[in-house]
Every structure is written in structure tokens, then in C-alpha cells.
Length: 141
Ligand code: HNI
Image (cartoon, rainbow, N blue to C red; front, side):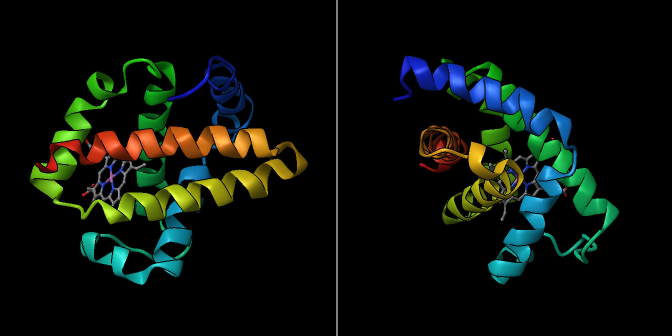
């Protein structure tokens, strides 16, 4: 459960960092594909080279979905319901992969925020991304 402080901190960081850099999603995806190559198997139809327009475009979609989640911290399950259906029924992404992408998102935040990536911010995003992953995986059974 996110604390009241974390519910304030997450939108603040989102507005100051994530909304200002539209490449953060692509940066996280590039890391995921590089560090965990099996994740590439879900994207056989994509050009996955560094700097790929497709990865950039997909990164923007992922960030937009996260933005929507940040606006609905009390209501994640409903806000992400369609996306959860898509990942479970159509894409059939193995839920372990959500953790891998979440880790890459954390690293990208850390790299971009430097010392502002405090333990409090780290903990808040860890909880938020775990909650997000749980919702994306909840239709699997
Ligand atoms: Ni995911 C499509 C959001 C994790 C594989 N994914 C999307 C779309 C969004 C999205 C948004 C576009 C939906 C649409 O077009 O209607 N994905 C998210 C979020 C997370 C996530 C917020 C976790 C934080 N997706 C993952 C993971 C994988 C993944 C971990 C696999 C490793 N996603 C896909 C694939 C598509 C996709 C594959 C379809 C891409 C395409 O355009 O063909």
C-alpha cells in the first residue's frame, strides 16, 4: 500500500522528471532488451536497434500508460483494465517480465535524477511499479 506521502511524491517526480523527457520510456526499453535479451522475443516485428523509431514510439506509449496510472493511484485496477486484458489475453507476456521492465525504469529514473533519486523516491517507485505489474498480471488466472 502506498502511504499518503508516497501518493504525493510519485506525481511530483512524474511531473518534474518524466513529463519533461519523452525518451525515458525508450531508454528503459533499450536497457530491458540489452540486459534481458529474452524480452526481445515479444517484439519480433520491431526494429530493436538502439535509436529505433519503433522503440521510441513504444516507449512513449508505455510512459503514457504510466502517466495514466500515476493519475489513478487509488484506482489502478480499473484504470489499467484494458491494458491488463491486452497483456494477458492477446500478448501473453509472462508476468516475470514486468519486474524486469520495472527495474529498468528505476535505473533510468536514477540516472536522470542523480541525487534527487533518494531512498524515499526509490521506495515509492518500487511500490508503485510493483502495484502496476500486479495489475497487469492479474488477469492471468
Ligand atoms: Ni507492454 C503494448 C504498456 C510491460 C510487451 N504495452 C503495450 C502498450 C502499452 C503497454 C501502453 C500499447 C497498447 C496499445 O497499443 O493499445 N507494457 C506497458 C506497461 C508495462 C508493460 C505500462 C509495464 C510497466 N509489455 C510489458 C512487458 C513486455 C510488454 C514487460 C514484454 C517483455 N507490450 C508488449 C508488446 C506490446 C505491448 C509486445 C505490443 C507492441 C506492438 O505495438 O505491437
